[in-house]
Image (cartoon, rainbow, N blue to C red):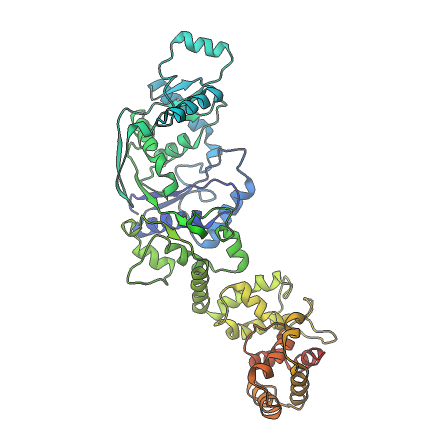
Length: 500
């Protein structure tokens, strides 16, 4: 193990989103590349917004994605606990030390007074930020404020100099001191803020590299100053972490991808049946390149190649079509038995397989999967394509369909077919009825002879009605193979039921 220690520290508010996953992925990959430690901690000090449901989803999401953590919830580690809500005594002690050492001070300004300051700065067109009014209060002023019932916040005393650091993604960056005013560490209610707890945990957990989103760039000077203060009062190892700010992920209209954008929701990708391998492969491309124009790689390959120096500072645009295409590539890559196993839950959600599928149903699925593996881009698509095989037919008993949903034809699609539909279905049923050997080859030969040679129909008008009548939809596995899997009795019953 190297001494590299990175962290992923989301807040449990709402559903996990792909921007958050991209940040976790880059940290995970860097830890695995260097042989370092991937720390997963939960920043849940905002009691008004945090929820246990969101916390559970975060853990479940990382497990589903396969991003195992070395320290954190359920795993433990030498720097626990890893939920900030369980570390309040630590933050209280650190805040006290910062106050006693002079790195922080009590601020008695009311919200109304702070708003007046901001309004005056806007009118004067000066740099916004706290004006330092409470930096040097006398004992008399403090007594007057407290006798008036004012409860102080704890504010950090920023050093009087500019801040420069070597950003791992963007190179040397400088913030002028006037743009980094004193800031609040602890609210007047006693609630510690992100500004205190995040750097404190980084220091106590010996985090060496902070890889995070560009939206947190402006907070870096404040954290650098706080890390220096923490080192002076003996909190943590005293070593300043290196910072790297990952590019924005942009959505439609060249705007930053928001939690409100449908394509940002991790739950959407799980519900539609994206593979973890495919989703992570695509997210890795949002700001990083493995080189040689290679856009298809495993997470093991990414970890082996990942260097922060290859992360771009330019915004990355999220392209759902490309994400879906890469997911389709992964579906075609994995073993068909693995794919069949992953499809089970999606068939169950469509009421096409029971909670405990039978051996006959599993066997049928295994035979059917190769027919759709090249045609599907998500697991849900595959389940819909294969639904015809497991749906129940009226009056027909089948081991494959016992106890599941009933078969139905998409009537709107059937109505869109031309006037030859009934003729094609009648001819198909009559021709197939005479077959003694129900194989793909015999089915194809018979239907071509009856519909194309016999009726003179073009393939589209010959086989389209048969496909729709037997599969229930226009998009389905190859027709002749499907009919063989479906069986003669069920195939004929469906073809005849499609005649209107």
